[in-house]
Length: 306
Image (cartoon, rainbow, N blue to C red; front, side):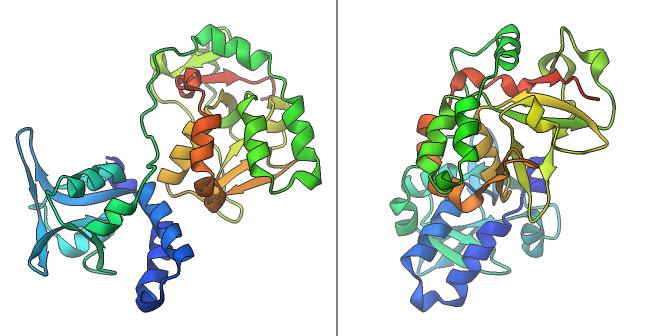
């Protein structure tokens, strides 16, 4: 179950700042906390069935507040047995609960920070990320293969080679929106036998391989402008390329509490930090969300190198 792997280290760091200096919270610190909340997948204590929802609540100033947790360790600090159900939802669900007057708000991590998320906070949060990646029109397997084989990101590569463009994120994302980007999938076993015409369809085989993560100085997903750039990554595991919807990838990175994305590690090393991705997330959704690529995550391509 996904909730067993949920963590919110970045949210808790932001929360710690608010908690330690509650009387002098700056706008910048509050904004960072809100950004983390918007991309969170928190765990709730509630008994849910098809016909009803029974929230586990605490009373504060005569009003009922639900209980939310950043991870299952925090949940078990309060509920050590299996009598209390736990469920995980995107933040927009909790905002809907408060807006619908089902609860006055939530108490976050009751056994630790015990931070009260009041209704007025939920009401001020706007422009929530879109976690739905369905599309009426998507590329077929053959179309994705042709797209991969015809990659030409020379315009983007020229832009990122120019050191004077460092920090010009709006221009960078505009260039990326017109590019075909790859990520690296790896496996401890050779998956060539599952490939048809150089493509492994995960819709047919089920999950295979896993996303390569650069863990130097943090936990970073990686994106590449060509398979040649992938060759700069050295790993004893089997390597496969995969086309990405960059907006979709960013959504996953932020929700999974990772530290950011590196473009072309081992060569250009363009670092997009978590804060940068959050700051520009609205722009990324508008410019880099090619919904035709939403099924690309279900395809891996064989590479020439072993």
